[in-house]
Amino acid sequence: MVQKQSKVSRLVFTALLAALVFASNYISFPIGQSRIHIANAVCLLSGMILGPLSGGIAAGLGSALFDLTFPAYAAEWWITFINKAAMAAVCGWLVHKRDTTNKSWVYFSCFIGAITYIALYLFKSFLQLRFITQVPIDTIAPTLLTYFLASIANGLFAILAAPVVFYALNPTLDKMGISFKKYDKQSR
Image 1 (cartoon, rainbow, N blue to C red):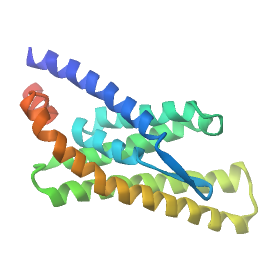
Image 2 (image 1 turned 90 degrees about the vertical axis):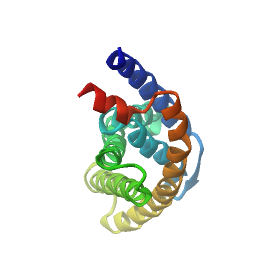
Image 3 (image 1 turned 120 degrees about the vertical axis):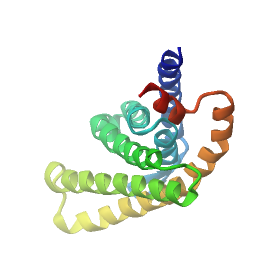
Image 4 (image 1 turned 30 degrees about the vertical axis):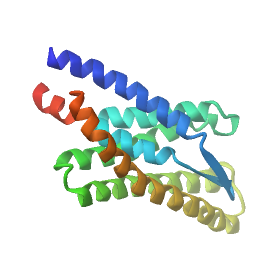
């Protein structure tokens, strides 16, 4: 029975966090050719709560669905899925490797997850600017700098906010019997 409850709870929470990632993308403001938003924090939170696989799916799916709602982003939905899923998966994998009472490890895991996303995003942006849109070479570095600064702002907010929300939610999830780390251990 616990394993079945675990699968249903995981599916529900994956869908819930995907919806939260989707909605959190709307809380943003533009900066240069990019934007500052809170979605990266929710992506990291997805990885911390659900672990690398389900958390990655929630982060990737919510972000990809957001991209599909904007014509300017729609063609890249699949790249966004990969990048955001990787961010959440790396963070979730690291967090679930150790005891979450070690707060410095949780913050470090968020840092590595955010860095993963920034590196993937900048790599994708470079390829797009250099080979797809083929902008003049001397404009690539300034454009990437704008993207980098926005990514750093998003990453810093995510690194600071996601663990706070994680630690606020964890006791309630445990009391409700919805601790996915416990389910993972029981289903093995």
